[in-house]
Image (cartoon, rainbow, N blue to C red):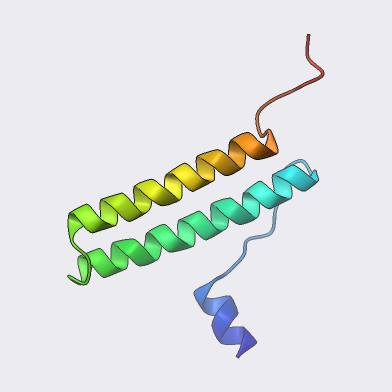
Length: 80
């Protein structure tokens, strides 16, 4: 069963600067990518309308942006 899960939801090894907030954001980004892929597949097969797909992806994007802001990604508090 683990192989099936790994096939459906692969996680790519992180190669960036190893900090807890970067690792958490990377996991959030991978989850965003997987969900967008599923939504696109559902829309392509007629299970979701284009508008429903757009709204779901927009909500996922807003969650990802919120995560970035809360984790402080891209901010350098020690820079003058």
